[in-house]
Image (cartoon, rainbow, N blue to C red):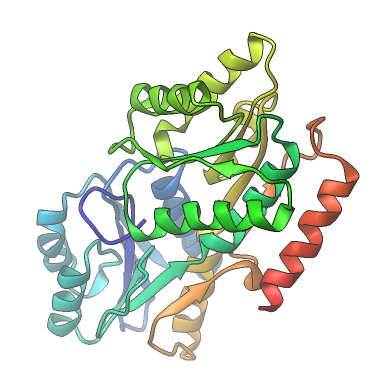
Length: 306
């Protein structure tokens, strides 16, 4: 979710023509049930609700990003890397370029950062309350800023819980789409004593859930957390909640601003306060007591007010 080659991210550009035209460029598949798919769902909402002309291009390599921008000229809606997006903004000054998942400002474009740390703090709070081994772990795809923020949030939340839970060193798979590598990392974490696994590996998440389910079948109480989209239904027996990014809402809201002429360029930070990022609990999971749910609500308010 940071602007580097191996991460799942997207960018959006908007033409300045009278007719709203929006193009989306993605580095992966728009059926990945995660980061890219949510962006595509946002594009579909833009088409339906704002009657925009839309186009999506998937599986674009970072090296080909600028060429894609050039192909679209003033109707492009996508970008992946800081330098390429900045270069495109200079070449097409009448085109609005929105880069999703970017924690740094981009001159001429609008960088959108989804504040996953706060939602991850809620994860840590729940982890601290449900863990029996007093150990939790994070499995991430890449050691990059946004995922390091997820890890930091997990640690902060565990402290908020007051449960004395240790967070093991983060495990990095270096892959967004290998369930095998994700499963191996989850197994390593559980072998090290963790009974709570928080992951951010996008399409490879199923590997983590399979590992946790297999451990649960042996009779041990183990738990997992989803990330990016609501993954609670993928393994409801072990998933106690998911950090959800409402990317469709973010892109729809930004496009509405552009269409209305009220858009103000500059970096955006979207989090709990606007409902763009949140922890969605698996309400039916037996591990989630009313006390834990109330604690999550109180901490959510505290973080949003901050």
